Image 1 (cartoon, helix red, strand yellow):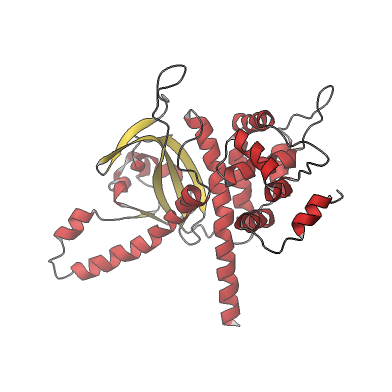
Image 2 (cartoon, one colour):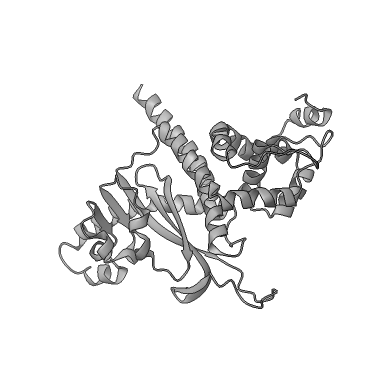
Length: 329
């Protein structure tokens, strides 16, 4: 497509913004062809009367841009009008065509949800990264985080989302859902995502977070007793679960307490990798509150978000690999 004058003017800017750099990284690291192929057979082909179809890759880019910046359907429509960086990423030239509207994106998002295609996006990204040797699969770290949901009852039914629940963490109550993830212990990349109500205990989902090839599983103190659960008896893995803080303090006076503390610190250093995807999703992608009603829609979005988190975390892994190679040379 021929470049417009506005795009030439934008490309000639001397300063690149953080948004420009961020989108350039997503552009370079996303396997667009593989993602389009995974979705294409479910995409209804346009035809007949009405507006011509927007194009599958363009809608996919709009959907990913929406999740990159934590925007609503209307928000990303406005952002395309306002931001040349996002227009270039999506592939829209307002001099020749109008931006896809919020309703068009809504229909595309519902297609992804109804056909479980966000899970396909997640698995396709992971297969792309695995082909680069970034998944070692010898160990898994499991953890969960609470994502708040709107507690307001000011809606048509006058009630909160019935699929969300409240849970107590520390001395505070939280209403929403939980994102349970299984993370590769070496790379820190997410290989499994499960969404549940917030009151579901972390330990009940541990078995579902394993991919089956690992030999060691690491978890925090909330997973105490996981090896004794019925679904985990006979599973050929070594469970490395953190000791409860109160028990660690009680043992502090013993002569071998220093060795025990050393072991706990090693386990904690491995478990720390599970916090990196949570940081990307909650802080960089700005997903701190559930956007939709119901677990299915929010879990579908979680697959997309953690797929994007893997792409962002993979950049650091590739740089580390190159740095180690350079130092060895």
